[in-house]
Length: 136
Length: 186
Image (cartoon, rainbow over all chains, first blue to last red; front, top):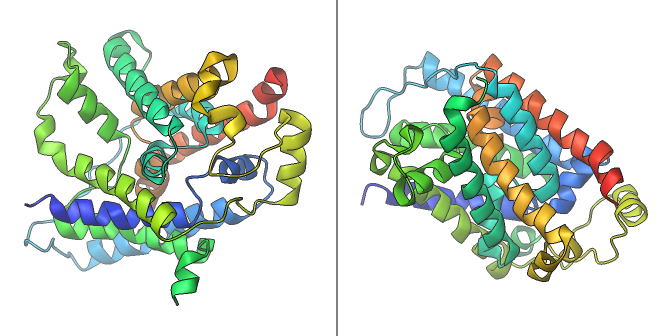
């Protein structure tokens, strides 16, 4: 069951998101109102740790546990990067949740999260259907 | 120790642990952290409807759905099994502003029940916060090519300037909603 390790890592990730209250609408409001350092500290320190880790992996040419080469694809720019980013930001402030926290909220027992996830799926599907007509 | 685990975790514990997810995914399978892609995979698996963007081998991305399923289980463990405070200790200024501007009175739970309880689907609040909000998250993340995990954490960790543009967009949208549209709604 080669996907089990991702399930386990997801469980740990979900526990951290929940225990640090990243999954809370209140914390996201506090962030967008600049009234607490909490979310900025989490995002900032996560990036610093991620950055150092990636540098260590690249410089030491580390391989995966199965001996595969590690390669990270570059992100490509198009106008969707900022248009879509802004649209997501509007939704982030409304729901207080990015996609990961929605799943954690559902697990924590918030019934509304099921509606959020269904609506997010509808949004992704609609984007996919309209993709060729949208500016990129 | 057990008591410490039950308390809300401070940023300097949670942030580095979230950051470590990036190398962990790379080392166990050369995967890039990114959660919003899971929404696309579910669409591709369930309702591809002949749409080119949804016609690909989503089974090759199953790991992502397992990861997301794990997040759900983690939410259950972290909230229900490890215990939680009834009311999240947000800053008094935020409480004051939310009372004054959004007329919120019940500060218990992860989300305000006055906006996110299912009963609200009978009025405009539920449709705006649950349905429109969720829709914008799903639409915007795919349009931008990532969310907080894929762009902010994973992308910025790998010094991708594209991700910086996306994250600026996230904040422009979030600040617009909080400071411009919320005051118009309430």
